[in-house]
Length: 395
Image (tube, rainbow, N blue to C red; front, side, top):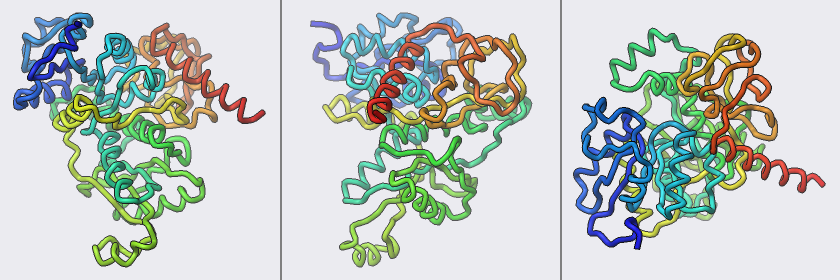
């Protein structure tokens, strides 16, 4: 009997990552009587992690983490690294819970059907998935899956990002990725793929909304035109709403719903205010350990990816360390069929530009040398499947 199948009154949770989410999650597990931290995988020097709440749990060994866990929580924020570790966890028959939409949109579809991998509640995609479950359980049909962006600057200065990074105690890359909209684009791409929704245009619409409910109903028109639910977002820095769904109701319930203060219909507005990140991951961990279904994944055949768009002219020979939170590029959601030659932004790690790319251009395969990785292999397999399916449907 392998280590992860042994009975234990407290289930052992292995954690991947040592950033903001991982720290908070490990602290939250200290309050659980049914769960315990079995190990925390980091690529950093363990001796340099003095600020981590469970330093003794740190390890640089994937094998050690897998051997001593009943379930793995991946929250590294790195799609390429996540792909490697999740692959090993699934080969050991471990279920995986993630807070990493970048992983799902880049390589997650490769793993659908190969084991249990699900995004967690706590970030916008997982919270939308939980709201989706509530809404559909009551008989409503979602037409709009919405995210609320408090502040958006597609090209913030490095000086301002360093200020907010220090003020908020969050990494420079994470602050920049959130500010320039990249994080939101990944979140809504995952939501679109997971629920068979579509995006209206590259980068989505992103309506400026004083009244979020009114904007949600404005999106409904786009959904009806597309004959599919849509995934999009609004910009509103004052509302407490973080995610929302506009859904069509049963006309036979119209009078009852109006009496219940839901409005005249035929579409209704549902929303969630609290997005508690690492604190909510525990709900999804328990869901999976109790035999519940996947909350959200990227589907086997996604239609939306996140492409890199240059923020400024990138010269030939430019080396890119980490693409997320970059001052050279940001990510936008795109339809895969419309941009078959785009490079998924999360794959642009440790790349060198082979030629100059002008500001505002999508980065394409001819522009860069992308190092081999399992994530790249996964993307090739995903798109091969998508394009083969399109050719069969067209013939």
